[in-house]
Image (cartoon, rainbow, N blue to C red; front, side, top):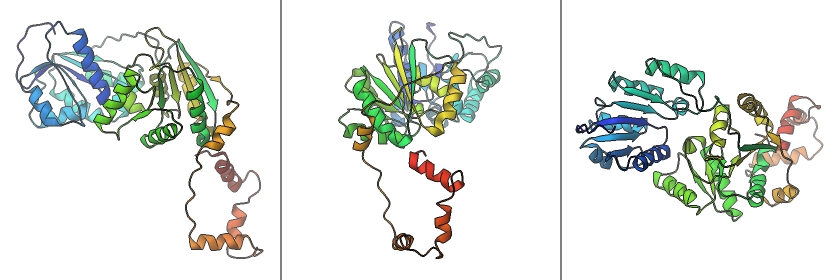
Length: 375
């Protein structure tokens, strides 16, 4: 890329694909930092921001383009960019590209790239699907492994606490108050779950913010900047939004919910213990997540160390707001009143019998699930 070759309009010489906006912006900033003496023209394109501004930036031609697949194809469809001059093609977080369903977009992009080019794939984990993707897009590839496949950072202390789903919020609140935290990432499986965690923590006077796909780009950028600057110490994130984010000083990773893909656990806890520092990863596991925990331990070859519930856990659970009950209809109230009577042979007798089966029956199992608060 240090070649003083003239830039052609509406083209780029190096294309880097990223699965998320935040990671694309981070990669582009790294290019600017490391290449500030090389006079390279570097641009970033992704969704969530006006496309016309990006079209104007690409018009004279650039050296390095960092993009997400969707916005890249939008620009190509609008004839604002051609890939005919790409000399280097980089696919970052290749495994996440497949998880997000980008394979069709990647195939389309590959057809537009020159046959003669240098291609590089980067991935912290290398499942079989990524190896097959490499065979499809690469010619005689050379594999370089920095650390053993699917192993977690040696400097991360990994713990697990077994708790019901309903009580996880109380446990998180206690841990965030008691632990000596520089910065902490809290992972949830869903966007709605991330927002619920933020709501409860803010109600407990714990400053935090969420970052996920339903947030606007401006909101995501502000939250990440505040986290980097230390203005907030707690960031709640989904796997998609936080993949590849490099923020120094993350001392803790909390798995509020375990990922249902064990490789994601490796990426999550890789956000801490960076640059030679130590880190702590704490997972909250309910009954339905124990199978995922076993898969994670088999993959990483690390057994998480159990940690008991804190002494003040019951008191914190009692302080937590209880879920609202749906208002009963007139018919439901009528049925409830009849259950309180002695009409054992009435129309509701069968329903009452089903809800009171002997231990080990279907009704007893469902009742146990409701009682423990599992989903």
